[in-house]
Amino acid sequence: RNLKALERSGEVVAFLHPDGVARYEIPTNEDHQHLVCDSCGLVIEIKFGFVDELSANLRERANFYLHPHRLSIVGRCVNCQ
Image (cartoon, rainbow, N blue to C red; front, side):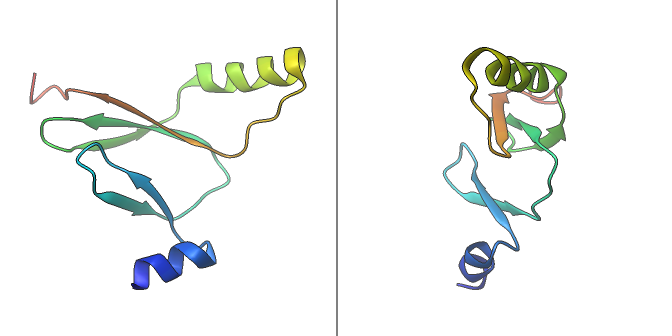
């Protein structure tokens, strides 16, 4: 219940892990992506430049602005491959 209250107040942001369990993090103004291992559950935060390029392209070509976002890419970490 406490996490839901913190989420409602904007103090934490939830993202759904592929295992179906929500994970929480402190929100930032910086966009970032998650690499998620579907075997062990490891989550690595990373920033990919192509997402910034996509955002700029959408603004230029479609006059469309992305909200701050998080992108999760699911695969296998080096230890589980």
